[in-house]
Length: 148
Image 1 (cartoon, rainbow, N blue to C red):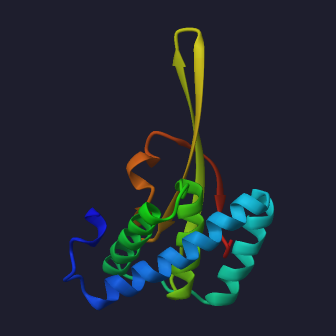
Image 2 (cartoon, one colour):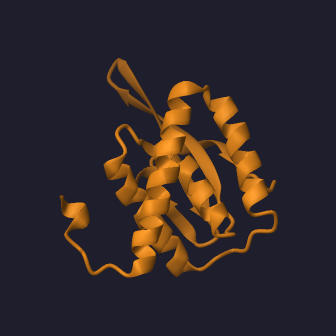
């Protein structure tokens, strides 16, 4: 598997991958068992408890945690953008860093057919570490900011 070919990752990257995997698996299971509103409420309460006064973090920490969440998504079946962004909020809060999740939509008009699409991404003060590649194609519909 391409994921494990780099055995010389720094120890911090391995720890972040393990943490992201566990959180992402828990979020994925919760999204299967509960509706999104309940998962959102639980996530916001957990994030507020983990990081009551979050810091902005650093671009390097954002990059490391973003890589960890994206790599963990390769290991968790069905871990799409919503699960990744939700897990990212929890992982960032565990590190005492500020983040927020945005959910966006797009409507592609192809002749008479209209295709609807939705996407979730994680925003930090330094950018979009999770889901950012596709975020520009979507119009923000709602933002979940635990500290707003």
